[in-house]
Length: 394
Ligand SMILES: Cc1cc2nc3c(=O)[nH]c(=O)nc-3n(C[C@H](O)[C@H](O)[C@H](O)COP(=O)(O)OP(=O)(O)OC[C@H]3O[C@@H](n4cnc5c(N)ncnc54)[C@H](O)[C@@H]3O)c2cc1C
Image (cartoon, helix red, strand yellow):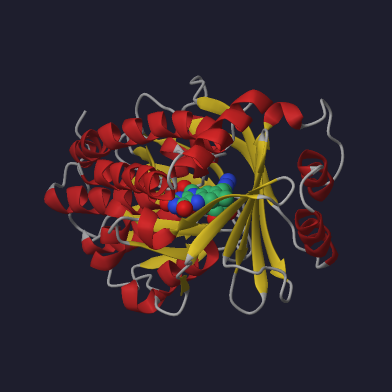
């Protein structure tokens, strides 16, 4: 079926979610002559949390949005990551300049990236905070949507950019079982703590879990814990910090101090299972999913935000090239899908490399790392990073 957009007025997109993909989509749709209404459940842009590395296609998209200058001063240049075992014994020291092997990338907090995208929003886009979609109907020529406040919004396209637990996906793809758990969970948070870290980035790795601590500006520390799902108690009723304490028990005192400090400061961790979204198709009629809602890659690939950005550029350009919306959605999917499928395969493989599941695999991996000359380890990492970035450009 061919869906043509109306010629009389500018076509309008209703975007659910003001995250990386929703904000970036509004920017690229403006370039295609569209207007956008963004509906965001939270009262404001989400604060805090974690660092993202932007490379490959995602970085190129940011450059084409001329946002590199706006991000200056918000990015981090980490020199090295020191990996230790649970007793604090150094396993490996990775210098980022060695492992990135010439691949350009920038590290930025997710909230700073989202705020930068929000500042760049064109006049054709507006955000309604504290709002969600109540129900919607695709009548073939328009989307008729009612939001929780009772307003009715008519749109030419409904974009589900509402993350891994997408309400748009749950409603329109309700019969598709698309969540693939990788067998790990994570918690991420940041908080203010002076002089807690001796280097930019330090990691502690035990069988089945990895704790990464980063020194941020203004005496802030970002923590990311990843663990095997079966390390959680069958019925965890504790708060999120108690769960993190339980799965990191046996790690060094610094990790326990960080958890205590974060809890005392009132920080609230983002916590979830590492889950990929694998759908046979990302659009249906006038509805399309973008970013994690469509194809969550998990943090294992370090490409989720990158691909969210790249996807919105592809969509914007396809909507610029044709007035036939269904054709534009098909072209967008045809270009993006092969890259996403390869990245998802990488996510399945990478988890067990960074967090070996059993004690024996953990000790074997560490032995291998000790026996290998540091330059080999660096070049293995460099090749892995390069492979991933090249994939996004293929
Ligand atoms: C710890 C961690 C580290 C990561 N590291 C990297 C990295 O190094 N590099 C990288 O590229 N990617 C990384 N990622 C992945 C990246 O963060 C995500 O892929 C990216 O944020 C996805 O953007 P999104 O806009 O699709 O979804 P989200 O960022 O989740 O945004 C969704 C938005 O929708 C809103 N929303 C949800 N439901 C509703 C609703 N019903 N109604 C209205 N609004 C709603 C939410 O409040 C949110 O604002 C990492 C992820 C994690 C968790």
